Each structure stands twice: as structure tokens, then as C-alpha cells.
Amino acid sequence: MVDVSAKTDTQRIAIASGVLRMLPDTLARIRQGSIAKGDVLTVADVAAVMAAKRTAEFIPMCHTIPLTGVEIIFEELLEPDNEGCIGLKAVVSVKCTGQTGVEMEALSAVSMALLTVYDMCKAIDRGMRINSVQLEEKRGGKSGVWLRKGIAT
Image (cartoon, rainbow, N blue to C red; front, side, top):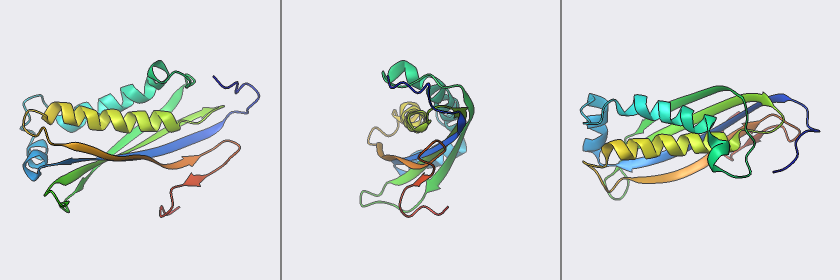
């Protein structure tokens, strides 16, 4: 691991996003709460928080970071792609005050949220696919602010 002991504590924020493409009926059933395994978005929200908190356990060179906040928002993407699939976008914001950033925690959280939705819906839609898991924004530390091009401040 990189030694961060000389770094000063600053507020760190990272935002990541990803999209799960699915059949329109799958999203309708998620909305209706008619998925056999339960309330999909609530379970995915909990999975995202758990993943953010435990990132250092499964990414070997990550530091254990005391998080101060994890927030997840789900957005419906109703414009069909060329296969007729619509999307569920997950956006996760992770915060801490510390010596190193929380980018990996945000990326882990969004990935786990989407994997959880997949797991809970795979019996009705095995063709779902996860796309575009990416860092959108990072704030804090010596390098300051990083924004993905096209993201408004």
C-alpha cells in the first residue's frame, strides 16, 4: 500500500455511476414491487453501502477508510437502446475526512448496487447487462477537483 501518513486530513468526495440495461417489463416489475426476492432498490441501496464500507477487504491495495456518508440515487433511463432495453442508472456519492480518496469505494458501491439488482431480477431477465461504471467526480486532497468532461460543476 502507498504510505499516506504524511498527507493531511481533508474532506474527500467521490461520485461514481453505472447503468444496468434490462427489458422494459423488468423495470416495470421493479417499480411495482413484484420481484420475488423483494424490494429491489432497497436491497441494492443496502448492498451499495456495505460494499463502500468493505472495499479494502476485496481490493488489496486500498486503505481502510472511515466513511462519513454514502448516498445512492437510482434514475430510470427510458430511452430504449438498439436492443429495445431501457436502463436503471445508479449514482453513488461517498464522503470521508481523511488522508486518501474514496474513488474505489464509490466505484465498488455502484458496481455492487447494479450486481444486486441483476441478482434479484435474473430469473425474469438473464440478458441484463451492466454498462459504463465510471468515476464522475472527485473532490479533496492535494489534487483538488476532478470532473468527468461534460459534467457541470
